[in-house]
Length: 393
Image (tube, rainbow, N blue to C red; front, side, top):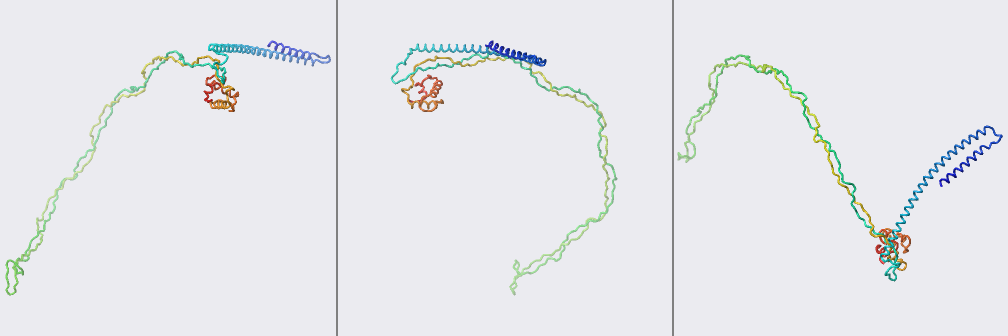
């Protein structure tokens, strides 16, 4: 095919080029040199075009060859897939026939009763899921290096050594109080006046006497003329207290001693002479942070346990096969039953189309989808399907 395309394109391009060249060289005797030059230029241009076309043809041929190689690969793959599908179909058919022959399957359903309908439906294969623990990664060990550990500690270092210096202790002075005589002791004579005092003296003013007084008493004198009683009463003497000034001591003189007069004077005196003393200068230390090794680096081997994973495998338990199953057909099916089936399929989440009691293609597709989902016999409305849908009949 590629060669044919190549040859055809080459012939067409060559014919076009020759025609152009031929036309360019048909120069009449009347034409001048200018036309010849133009013809040569046209020939060169056509040759360039021919060269470009040849290059395009070459690239197209290369692309066609690669496409043909891809087509060959696809054909090979399709042939392999077709062969594999045919082989699988033959195996399935053989298994179904073997199962039918082994179970004594008949061309007609066995033990059928009048009014019952049967159909050969495909019983899907049954599978079981098993889990298996497989090694994902073998046991190993990991080497880890534990780095050295350090800590910062305070270290006291000597900055300046201890020394001593002489220090002058100055003299100490203090204030002392001194008593100084200002005026000597002396005496003076003072006049002492006489001392008097007042004394009370009792003077008799009237002496005591007796007199008669009317009344009753132990001594009575009865006057017969008047009949009165007269008592002799003693009247006491009358005294008067008189104060008079009496001299106690006569006037005189006395000598008074005048004590000496002193004055307290403060003066500054040296209490302690100047001296020298040695002063110890202590050593000067400084605390610095020092990093010290606590534990050296070491290696540590850590065992990594084997890692397993659980995989799930699906194994076929029984092969799919054809089997006679009791179904609903036109003989024993009613519009009411089909309506119930359609409603049950719709309630189960499948679309049977309109709920009209007609067992149409949409109802059939919904039924098959339901049968596959529930792992039931697929192909006809079996009694198992009706029971699974919960339809009473």
